[in-house]
Figure (cartoon, rainbow, N blue to C red):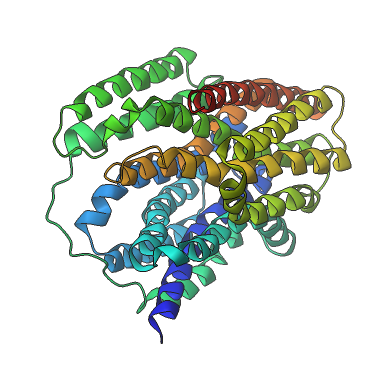
Length: 461
């Protein structure tokens, strides 16, 4: 086997694990009504199968600069294979929601280990003049996961049942293991560095956990709003503490000094806000189509498929557009389409969102996502020095993963507020109203993101 083919197999092997994680993320959106009915739970609790997963992925990605230095690439790859297998088996064999959620958390650990691996292999093994091709392969694997997830979820639910959503994914794990067992090799010698547990990892965990909890249950009828709001306050205070603490450390878990660069900071925040919506929009449309329109999971999946595929196909090619037109024009066009899509969803759900209307609007929205996601990350990291780029990359990767947790938690808590205690026609009306309010919330976040990007591009004239 040539060295080039060996590298390609290693990239595909690690990329398949990332594909698995994102595929299940959107596949479970389609399965959400089934999950709620099977375990007799509310939307605010049910959405934790994705928001808790994204929380763990975000924490592990933020640890990636340490993990990639401390352990060999092959060790991390084989560990993620083993952990994914355990997580899938636990969720697939779950007899109650708590066990299902436990499996999802374990899967989050595996996905958090695998996501940085692929790009680390590309950076280390691929010559600069060939990186575009290999990054295109990796990006395609990442983007095809959420694109095919709804179709995968609906097909499995049609022919099998909920547990098989997880058990069938073991096939992907075994293919990944076969491709990567001998091709994923140690890239550098592991360094015996210590992890900043007390001041770094624990603070990050508290921040993200409190934020997820607070957003998930702020409208819960079981948990007091005081507890949820208090959780959000703790998250804010701990974030301030973490930044002050890390700035004083010689070897912090994350180099927060990258945020001293104002344009990088604004672009990273803008990226986070723009990435909050995509998983949540799929989540909302899946529930809306099945609850309000009384259509099947298959219909919901087919509504999402054209837009998801477009976004997946645009993402690898959008980098070329960035090189030709520049960040301002390429990202600007993407943000216009993204914001327009959300605005159209707000207007359409004020009356009734039809199937073809949903297909077209989602198509517009996802074309904007395809043009902005990778390009915002590329543009933001280019603002940093070479020494800062690994930390900047970790912030962007974690933002992309954790933003999904925030978006799903927000939409879940809004829907729950309008659905709680309702049945029949009142449940349908509550779901429709909750969906519209959620879209309005994401539109506001998109407009804030647009404003931050406007500041960045104006300062770069």
